Length: 75
Image 1 (cartoon, rainbow, N blue to C red):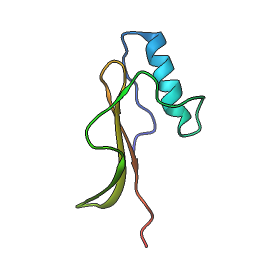
Image 2: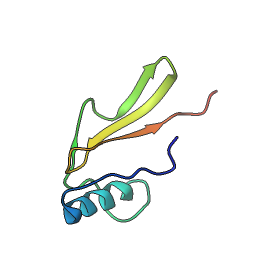
Image 3: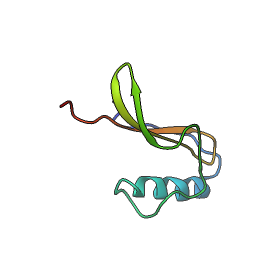
């Protein structure tokens, strides 16, 4: 698990709007998705070799791919 990630951007204002909105969905800053696009499959549960995971993917305005992952507690 990463504690932080640094991402280079081409347009600071556009990227700030996007990341402020994206992080707002997890309680950090204001907003919902702005300026990015979804990619691959829609958010949802995936079954794989490591068990059940909830995954969501988006791309920021510079094309950087971001993955949000939730692993439920083992029963």
